[in-house]
Image (cartoon, rainbow, N blue to C red):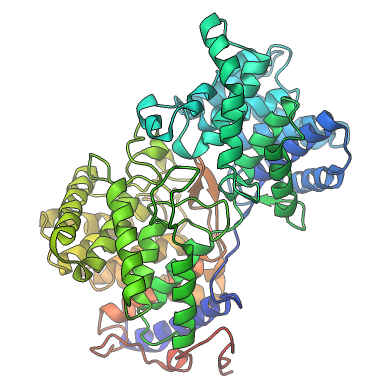
Amino acid sequence: MKAAFTRERVSAALGVSTRQLLEEMGGDGFWVGELSSSALSTATAVIAFAQLATADGSAQDEPRIEAGLNWLAAHQNADGGWGDTNKSHSNISTTALVWAAFGAAKQDAVYPEVVGQSRQWLQKACGVDSAGWEKYLAESIRRRYGKDRTFSVPILTACILSGRMGANGWSEVPSLPFELAAFPHGFYGFLQLPVVSYALPALIAIGRAIHRHAPTKNPLLRFLRNRLEKVASRKLEKIQPENGGFLEATPLTSFVLMNLAALGETNSKTAQRAASFLRVSMRPDGSWPIDTNLSTWVTTWAINGLHRQSNLLSYEVRSVLKEWLLGQQYLCRHPYTNAAPGGWAWTDLAGGVPDADDTPGALLALLALGTIDSRARRAGQLGTRWLLGLQNRDGGIPTFCRGWGTLPFDRSGADLTAHTLRSWSAWLPEWQGAFRTEVIKAIQRGLAFLQKQQRPDGTWVPLWFGNQDAPAEENPTWGTARVVLALRELRDRGFEFAPEVLQRGKAALAGLQQADGGWSGGSGQHLESTVEETGVALEALAGTSYTSAVDKGVRWMVERVENGRWLECAPVGFYFAKLWYYERLYPQLTTVAALGAVLQGSVEFGDVPEDGSLESEPLAEMKAWSPFSRGPKQKD
């Protein structure tokens, strides 16, 4: 790549992307973002409101049902099915739920073509178009999720409640042991529940509904469940946040509400709060997102990406962000997951739960915001301790709870472990004595985990990101980029590990580059490069010996910024058992972080001063930017 191109155009592209990201900051001093509307979420909300109306005879939610169905009809894919987002391929789970939503609302006659096409899609997916095909639908859904019943049972139950599974529908859904919710939370990991740790509300509400409509034939178990129904119901009410939204998630909250309605408990406190949450969560166009927002997640990502541009944020902004972040740390045990104090959730709202991706992100952001005073140091130590308590026996880091490794989304993740190791090593200079030794040992265990998780081709696979076009819907680009970035930082901070682990990772990441210079979720000509995946790959490889790959990637990204396509989102995120989403800020976050890393990491890209500051004209103009004054506008 020619120096003229890098100096003039890379710096300008970074300036454009940085300004756009800064303008996204809200007046309260943090980022909120915007999650994609979800056909699956919209369908579950419609079913929940339809069940509520059937149970109590109220017409209160008829406008919401109508708006939701109109949105679903308008966003049907050309093949007759639905994907999780408007950019997602049709899948059997979402299509079945949308088909069920029209049935629950008794609107088949109003939308005959939409319903007919969806039925044909489902029959084709099941390989059966004869009478009784619904039984094969149930088999297909169960097969999609395997032994993990977190999503298969809620989907089947929703179809049954909507009248889509015939007279014997309840025989197609396996029971859920809701009675286990009566045990203290510390036992859950040993009990090997058939749902993931964050799906306890679904276990309780859906398990009770199944028990009511299709009780077990085992008389002792039936007696036990009868006796423990009230205990489980009280547990559900206890773990529900004040605003009614479990995990701030429309699907989970909807599944709970529709099953409580089926139990005749529409007037219960839990049902009323859940309905209230769904009402306020509906968007003006009649859709629902998968979650309210990822405010903490995108804010820490923005802080850490902008940090490469020294003194960009004013002291006032950094102070506001610091106070806001400190205020988001959980300082008491969480009622939902029983998590110890010290973690951060993905959102500042009531339904958030502390997790092992947002906590290291927040810890790194606190360091990026400047001087660590006594309050920030206490928060850092508490957050570090929280992550230490989460580390599994295998040395890896799970999302929410230690020891729930039975199901895929409860296992240790390479992306989570890499993020945690970055935060532990960055904070290490602040610690002394026994605590410092404990952190070092935890880092060494985490490094051993990452080494074991590296695949023969040199890649790692993340837990919470994927690519719908890649084999097994995995995303080795994302996982490898996150681990490579962590290993480079750990090496620079003096940690020793087999050098070939990092070398193979960098080589694999460079090898995943597409012919056009960008990155997708893996290798293969059928995969389209995205801003998000190119961004994380560039950030990880910037300043390495893979200059050819970086040069081509930078050119791809700069051209995207120049032609305006850099704001296009891709559904790379996973939420709640492979539920796809995209976030409007992800392209901006990855672009700013990547171009900042490239300019900071190599003198070839802009002759960066030794202090790492980026003083090209578009950036120098924005120094000490503040959302409260909105700063100077970019020159024409």
